[in-house]
Length: 128
Image (cartoon, rainbow, N blue to C red; front, side, top):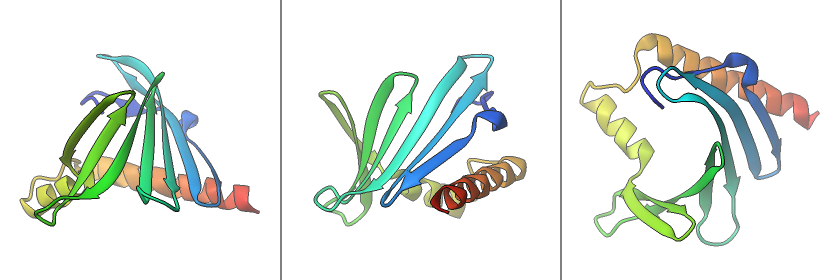
């Protein structure tokens, strides 16, 4: 997310069904304007096992976990015919935290937790 981007709380939505959850929201940024975002997290029963699909406005891409020859987890990003590989985002986050360089300040980390809990509550209500 851009440094000046904020998620508009009123746009946060979460829906789900077994093995598939969709989280959507709009970010607001002075630099980039409004961007509609959705994150699809689902479990496949073949390979790749876990896939996350991200949609930013109308551009969609998938992130698939992979284990590299060195044993470190990586990520494969796919959009259309383009494919790129990089470190797994969670691996990068853990490494930054271990080096005392967290990507979020305390306020943003607490806000992130509030959003996660709000999404959890939305999914629980939808399951009833």
